[in-house]
Structures are given as C-alpha cells and as structure tokens.
Length: 575
Image (cartoon, rainbow, N blue to C red):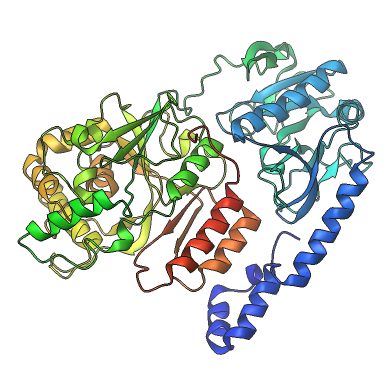
C-alpha cells in the first residue's frame, strides 16, 4: 500500500492526538506508520534478501533488491544518475522492442524531463505483450497500469498479469539504485508511457469523441495528451524525427515545437557561504565591529551562514532532475567548496568582487545586497533560476514549471502574509524587506500586495531586474551598501521581481508540489522519513530558520542521513 494510516487521518485530528499522547507512545505510533521500527526494518530486509536470491538465475545483468514507494523491485545499480537519461533509456528500450517485432507505433510526445509517450493500436495488444516479454527476458523490466487512483501494482513484463486486458495506458520501466542502497532512486515515475489507441471500425462523419470526421482505421487516444485526440487514417503515415538521438516514427504534427514548450536557455544561480571559514569569520567580525547601528538578531545569526554541505546535494538534485539547466553560476565571497570540480565547463564561480564591480560595499554579509546584483553576472542567460543551497529538486521537473513558452516567469505565493504595520527595527529582516517592497509597489502602481513567497527555485528575468534597477536606482544602491541585513533593505530577487513582473505583464502565478520544513522543528525527522518513502514533491526546502539552540551534531546527523539517502550519487560537479 502506498498510503499510510497517517495519510488517511485529517491533520487537525493528528495534531490533537500529538498533543494528548505521551511522547514515547506517539513516537512508536509514528514509527509504525512510517515503517521505521526495528522489526519492520528487519522484515523488509529479509524480503529483499529473498528477492535478491530468487533473481540469481533469472536475470543476466547485475541487480540489487530494493524498495520504491512501497513496492519491491530488482534494480540496476549505477554510479551516476540523471532522470533525463533514464527517461530516454526506457523509451528507447520500448521503441526498439516494438520495431524488432514489426509493430507499428507512434511517438506521441517526448517533452523535456518528462515521460515519453508511445502509441500502438489496441488490436496489437497481444503482439506488444510478446515483444516486451522478449525484451524483458533475463532483464528486470517492469510495467504498471496508469490509473487515476495510482494504486495498480507493478509486474515484470514477463508475468501473465502484465498488460492485463482492460488497461489502456501503462508505464514500462527499469528501476535504478545506488550500489548498496535498499531504496531506489527511480521507478515507475520515469517509465515510458505506452498507450493502446482504439481503431475506428467504420467511418464517422462527425465523431462524438473528437469533433472531427474520422474514417475507418483512424486511431483514437485513450486519454488526453498535448497534441491530438485522434489520428485520421489518412494521416497515419508518421513523420520521422529524432527522439533522444534516434530517428523514430512520430505523430504527424506541423512542428515538433509546441507553443507551450520552453525553447530558450535557462541558467541557475546559487549563492553560497561557508560560515566556518576562519578568513571569512575575520572579515565578518571586522565589518560588525565597524558598524554604527545595532543589528537585528536575525540579521547576522550564525545559522544564516552555516554550511552543512547542502550545496553538494542541491547540485546533485539539479543534475538528477533538472538536466535542462544550461549553466550554473556559484556566487561566493573568496570561497570555493573543496569538493567542487571547477574544471567542469557547466559551472562558473563568481566572486563578490567581480559581481559588485564597484557598486555597494564589500565585504557584504547581506543576502539582500548580494541578490540586488545577481543580474549583473557576465554571460548569464536572460531567464534563470536563483537558488539558495537549502533548496532541492525532489523529482524530475521541466522548464515549463518555472517559465511559460512565451517567456513569462512563474512565481509561487505562500499562505504567509506581509504584516500590516510600518517597517520597524524589530521586524525580522524577511518581514521588513517585504514591507518595503509593499510600500514601493504601492507608490508605483497604487496596488496592494499581501503574500510572501515559497522557498523554491526562483524564476528570474534579467530585463525585469535591469528595468527595476534603472527605475529604483536609489533603493537598489542603498540595499547594496548595507553589509548586513537592514530594516531599509528591499527584497529584490525573492519578492520585488515577482510583483513588478506581474504588474507589468511578465510573470504569472505557477504551481509546484512543494515541501518545506524548519530543521529545528521536532516533527522534521518524521516528515523527512515520509518524504524518502514517497518522493512525491517537485521541490523541497530544508530551512535553517534559527537552530542556534539545538545540538548541531544532532542536526547534522539528521540532515546528512536524509540527503545521502535521497541523493546518494555524486553529480558531475563533484571531483
């Protein structure tokens, strides 16, 4: 079962139980619900050992027994993982099997970082089953029916129940895992979607399903896609196009470029600091000593600058799940992570001195000031994502989740609201920056803003920021001069950009499946265990709001255990 008891109980009921039940009892219930008790772990390990033993004489490739989203699989072990490669590999395996068997098929869609969709005639079901069973002989190849309830079990393609009568769409896939891990990194979610299209038996002058005349022999889709509800018989001659580097028979559309596809380059920009660096600490202490104003406690608290190696895992997540990113820029203050492979041509380290170029005041320890200059990075694409190192991609995402095909940026509002009062010295910096943005936008547009934004990869347009900087030169310059977060700062990249772009017709609200947790919260450990099991969020943020009162070793163990399990394989950015 993919759902747990906790998932079926309303959150308000869970909260009441949490408050009423003693901690040891609640922890036991929580561990049982997440499968984390010792006896549950031992039982899982025993089942996996049996599966591994049974596979010895059944397959001709190296495999390891794993679990993924509640199911047990034989997985192919690997030392590097990119979702784009797995998506292409699964589709290629299915297409090659169909071609080897002489079965007619069409590639319906092959979007960036998304499942490839292949169509075959429903009348060819028996031949398709035989073709895939032959491809899956001595190979751990699985199939699972695609169903709105998402509750269908997976099966080896050689099993009698694979492609059972009644199903019209399946995902066909291999499972992959890091060597020595019991949890896979991919499964049915990265499979090739294989659809069985109905064939019209007779002419239909005005087809009720599609709204167009269809002659006998036309194919009709079993579910919606981006391109067509049907392929008329006279158009069934495919167009030959390159799909993942191989020429395949494709849907006879006018162009392979859909209007909603993103075809422009997108870069990623990270800001990073190692607060443990003695040289950096000396620069920070000197700047604090020279300051004339008392700082807000959250303007320079240690947790704001603490590095727990999150950047390594955030870059792994980018490599795994957002391979369409063209180039990565890492903005630092005379620092480079010791593990970073600076010879990789896809990443450039940008020092604050080069970024500011004489603007502002260095050294700076103010993220608002740094963010005010990011659009000046030489060579940066016109559209880019800005990320902090505590933000991660949780599963394959496409560029269309952050930008529209016409270039509009997407932003993601939070339920948290901007306070109604004036900016004050005792506001937390995130609140004072939001209030200053509110006042600036009200003066400019006579419109009110109310919401903060989620901690996700932030879609940015350079033209918006250049225009803003020209229009609001004084407040940009003042923010850039503040070496620490200041009540007069504006929050440019994370907030002002979105509202200004929206009010000038260059951004709209988007949607992401999002996970956020404060690592200082007591429930975080349990939430991370659930996330490891489900892997069902597009992006996630493990925010260090203020953990100065918590045991740092405890935090490090919790985060390291989660990140190494979720992102176990090195990225191309590591030495």
